[in-house]
Image (tube, rainbow, N blue to C red; front, side):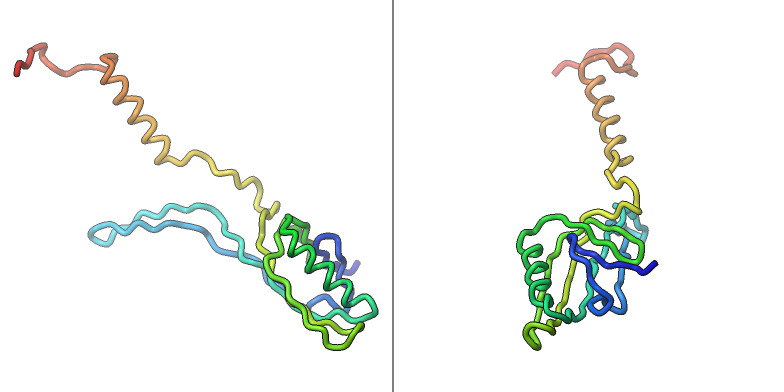
Length: 160
């Protein structure tokens, strides 16, 4: 079974499919540098790299295919990208083409921003430990202010 590259329902044939496509990304994080050289690192989750490739459309429908992809870019909608047995939901952020010979030869370049990668599972952020600690502290402070907290005073009064 041959691998098929499709973008927004447009199938690339053997000639227009690039010889290579990259994927992957980085880990989004915030690094807090503390006095003395210590660090606190908050990992925020995967940050998918853009998926870029280029190639050539060849045939009587070469220009029509390029125009259809450019229309997908202009619409700015989330579309399906399949390649190498993988699936991503993407937005075409850049598409350019050069007509070399009308109507049979059009060179193109595509860049897609990954909207979602289902292979990574549910990436809905959960409440961080910092948020839960702050909420707990606020609850304790609120309870103490309303008098429902425990008191360590010896019962004396302070007058001003």
